[in-house]
Image (cartoon, rainbow, N blue to C red; front, side):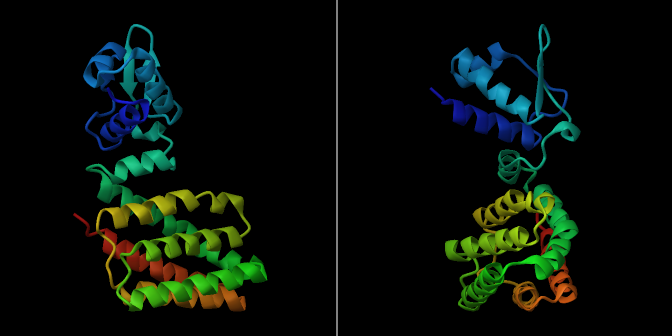
Length: 229
C-alpha cells in the first residue's frame, strides 16, 4: 500500500509536469482506487495540494487541477516535482531568469551591508568552488554543497528578507540540475571566474563590481540552460 508521502509526491509530479492538465477533474474515489490507499490518505494529499494552489475541491464536482497562475510557484516541493517531470527544462529556465532579476541586486546590497564574518565566508566558499572546479569536481556533492552555501550566504548578506526568500528555490534548482546530470565536472570558465570575482568584490565592499560579476555568471548559466533538451 502506498504511503501519504508517496501518493502526494506522485500526484504532485503528475500535476506539476502537465500529465494532469489544468481543468482535469479527479474524484476521491477514483484516486483511492488508483493508489490503493484509504480515503484519509487521499484527502490529506489533496489538502496539501490545495494549500499549494495546485487543485481546488468542490462538493459534487470533485478535485479540479488548477491553472498554473494559481500555484505557489516558489514552493520547494512544487519546484522539485517540476524538476523531476517533463517540465524540467522550463523550470530550470524560469528559475534562472528569476535569479537574473534578483541576484545582481542582492550582490550589490551584500557588498554594502555584509558583516565581516559574512564577507569572509563568501570569500572562503568562492575559493572552495574554484578549487573543486579546477580539480574537475564540479559535479560532486561537495561542489553542490559549497555552491548552495555560497548563494545562501550572499542572499543572507544582502539584508533584505524579500530577496533572501529565494534561497530555497535556488537550492532546489542547483540540486535538480545535478540530480539530472546537467552539472559539468569542469564548470564553465566564465561562470566560475565571475563567482570568484563577485566574492572578491563583496569582500572589498565594491557594489558595482559585485553586481556586474553576479549578473555575468547568471547570464552565462542562463545561456547554458536555455538550450537544455
